[in-house]
Image (cartoon, rainbow, N blue to C red):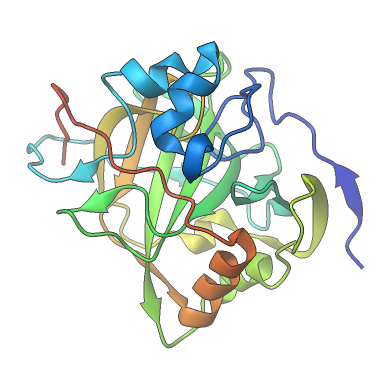
Length: 250
């Protein structure tokens, strides 16, 4: 039996258990009066959701050629040891010590979580599911690797280590996984990526997040994607936001 414990903040910068998000006092959701179009009205702390100019997610189109450095991940094997359902997503918390380096700064992997359908789109098209690997530097700045999933007849064995144990109820409590999930095992071998500057995709929609969207998708079975969707009871993707003056690098 998996041991339960109350969820605690991942690190001092305040990343909460609700996806790529900082803690927001007002209750929010994905439909109706608590849906994305109203997030900026629910709490004054969410004002960026309404007036921000560098919001996420976006449609990946019109990319500009750039000499992006190779993405090197230094992830511990089996570091995803706890899973939780917070009502907004299913999240796997990662043990300390796994990093990437962006702009010469080291960012530590804190957690990864999922959205269905995908939040970011490719040339206007959604993928069935998207994972966000959330990293923070020592000052609390965020870098997110986004991974798209396509549907496959074959299940994803690494993903199954988490998805076979999705908590049915949104209690916000963490549960220990029988087998630790390896974040590196979820990523494709080719880590080519697009890059843009964006925001949290949930309230308070704070900007300044470094986004690295992998060009190559992974795969999950219809049953695995359905297991996640059924648990959420609703889509949990924020609609794409205007690009405005930003450039997407490739």
